[in-house]
Picture 1: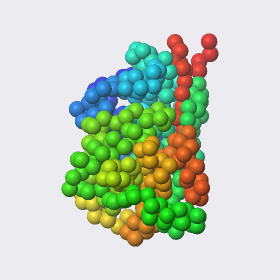
Picture 2 (picture 1 turned 135 degrees about the vertical axis):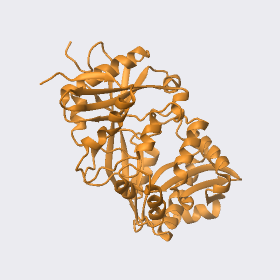
Picture 3 (picture 1 turned 90 degrees about the vertical axis):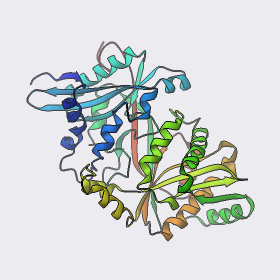
Picture 4 (picture 1 turned 180 degrees about the horizontal axis):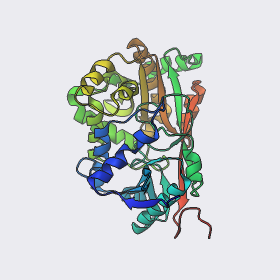
Length: 382
């Protein structure tokens, strides 16, 4: 067998092959959902992705002449993460590979060298490109379609990474939700008391002042998750970019804001789960994909609850419970019958305990992996 050759992706042709690899790997997989190609191109474009205002990325591929591209990944340097957490962690992201352990070892040798060049002594991933975006390898829950903006991969990815010396860093959890979920009677009685006494008002986002709303959400989000593993605050440019990306698919009634005394103290970001539509589009919005997306979005009965954040000073005031109850009523009224609460980092015990107490079940598990960066391949024999 020819030796796998690693190369850095620079040319337009190589970038096209890098972005297309998932279509080759997941061909015939009934659960895989093709991402939008325009979004992938924007992800790696320094002119369009605000991550590049402070971070650096190098793209790598592995190929054998007769097989074409076998594996790919990005080396990601996030100095804001290292400044906040006072470490020298580098990340890898956009990982996709055929079941070829030798090629993957070659790939992570190159990734490690790139990260070491930025002064990193450890690598963690997959992260695309921050922990505020898609992260982790799916290790449980292969029997269902992934939710919008969550990871999906063949089951062998776990073994490929373990073969390179990677070990579990932390897991991310997805919970199942349905309109007829049997909430405990105690939860309902507590919520009714909170409505009467808390002074917290729940309302939907106002699209007419979306810029101001997003700034308020940014402040709460950054404060709410400041003590969560691996968290890096979102910049104004990143929150604006996220808002633009969600604008055409959002159902405003599902983006809920919690206010106390006229001040935003919590929020719940829920989006229609458009993955059934994206699967049919095969990554292309043009020429008719955009119209199909807009028209079919209105008939979706599935949603993804992406983020629920509450200011630390209001965590013990029942704000999360009020948001969940309001969302359940709104979702049912608007015809959303099923959904997913994802992802919740396993060390976020306050949230996992709440969801467990309400009877929600973990249906998917995603893993982030970590390894030191030695002089040779991660996990290589000395």
